Length: 200
Image (cartoon, rainbow, N blue to C red):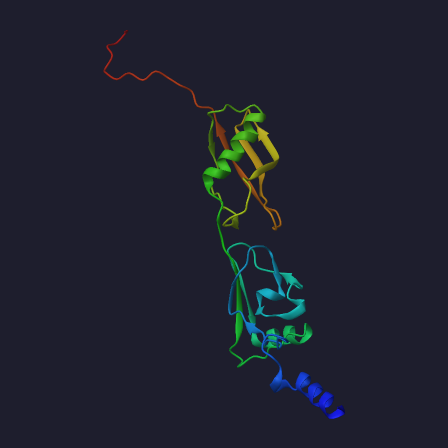
């Protein structure tokens, strides 16, 4: 009877006799050579698939919208060791590229936001707004709100202004840029469609 129980115990713990699906063996992590980020921060899961219990660990800030960072094999190995990830580089050429897609803030979107702010300060609704030398900030491809105007300095007599445009969105830090420009009221004037005689 004792031998029978002993054989049963051996069957339960012998690796080769474990029934499939009862105990899942630990999976080695795999490197994510290219990752598209959706925010300004990098997590362990952005570098490795099957990263283990620390997959959601925040590693630090990532690139800005439209930018990328490259993590080389030596740093990847150090990160894996620090957070108990079952991964080793196959060669010194292993690396991970992290990208956050972005695009320039459209000029028309900037002008639309400026128009609302300038109208609140007395500018005409159909005024002409010029922002020469406009250098658009790079913003995420999606998930952003329309730009907000703050710190508006408007000289109505001179038709000049300076302001800060800020873009915000879920999971991102605000992106701000300073713009300057000119405002001119649009005046409707009659325009003849034929030659008019003198003293008409």
